[in-house]
Image 1: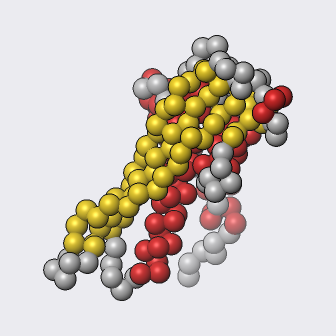
Image 2: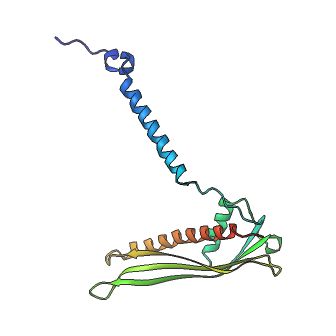
Image 3: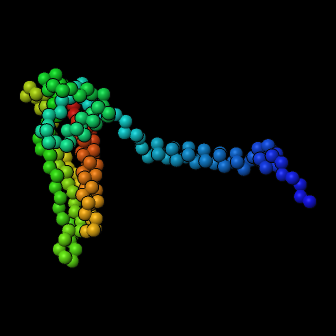
Length: 185
């Protein structure tokens, strides 16, 4: 006849032999501390907010510009600078001079149809005060992504291309913010 298993015999904390569990928790804690110490030692730091050298900004862009909305969102969420609706009240005006999307063929299949594309987004912008003083001359920011495709997935390919362009818009807006934060006024 086997003895009945009681709650005390099943739960190691009630038996008093929880040393393996403590060692496991302690090991995980030490590992996490070592990993975070390694990240700090290599210079890793969360991006945080950018510091722009002006108190308020106006984004001047054509209505068809996709980067203007992304840049405005990046300024609102990633800086302490106010985004204003009137260029006359702004400390600086970010003018989107041009914005172009390009699609180059990288490879073709045996039938001569494109199998791989390179998507490229180019934005030219300048920063000035609206009164003749230029803080940043026209500057081009470019980013690109490669897109491989299967012929039978035509609709998915177009959706993926649009998602890649959205990702590139975010990257370009962040590059623009970094360039503006490096300005000395």
